[in-house]
Image 1 (cartoon, rainbow, N blue to C red):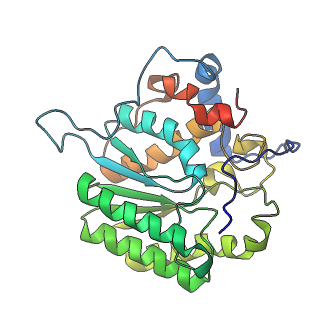
Image 2: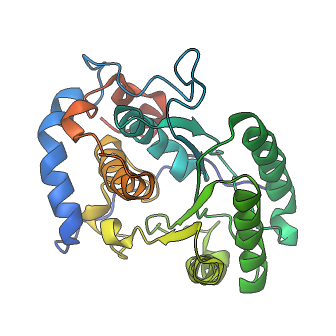
Length: 276
């Protein structure tokens, strides 16, 4: 099986002026802090606490398990910082070049690997929330996609965890992804159907509220590859996502000023993408 490169070199596309309102607001709130931090070590180490709870109190913090492909992976440093600052332990199970749970024939090997890792991590971590960001590898038919997301919902229910099914930003389709454009397009709808049918314990979060739906839009705050986020985009996503997570867990999300200038901004995943 030929996997897509994790970080693709692309020619930057010209930005468009249309932005979702929430993206504008988040961008304005984050820009000042991130300009001082991106590409260098921050003065704060917020967000590097991992998923460890306080000594002697294993349930001191609610626990979030984060899954997805390399798009989710490059969002993880900011998400960990924002979650930790908000009192949520964070564990990253994203996967470069994979991460899917859909068991279509062409990606069965990737899905098997994800499920094996997921079962092990759920057993050891006992997360309160499992969040799955739909991947660029969620191919297959709508039925196969629904089966996979239903299986996730069943696992979360058995583990007494909440499940969040989250859409990814719109991506620029290259020669690798273009043949799967229709399959990628049906995945969000399949996830939304599963969440609606499952009822309590499963939620669908449409990140188009943040990114919009235009793969070329500058609101996406991404690297030149048209796929992955740079620091500011990851911070905008973390702010948006943790606000939803805080509602679910009944907690107050930390303000970006508390975590956005942390050392996470110097994560090597950003430098590999050419983010400054």
